[in-house]
Image (cartoon, rainbow, N blue to C red):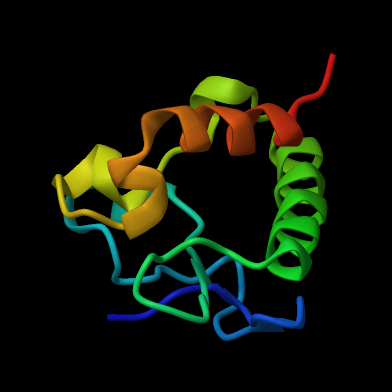
Length: 105
């Protein structure tokens, strides 16, 4: 498993793989996705506010660079069915609220 970015619970962003290289994280979508792993402090899987703030900035930056819209931002769950990210795969309303932050009106 690998990912392009990891975001820590304090909001730090680490790029692990260049964007022009494939990340092996989502099986069928490895060829056309940029993967972001987010750390969480407990078993609920809910991200800290610092993680969310950094995730929003990173997704907005990537969406601008690659011309993505709401449909272009997906979860690991949407590709593989794995409950990942757990909190946002088991709480659809939380996912929709988080996703709305990426593309505010």
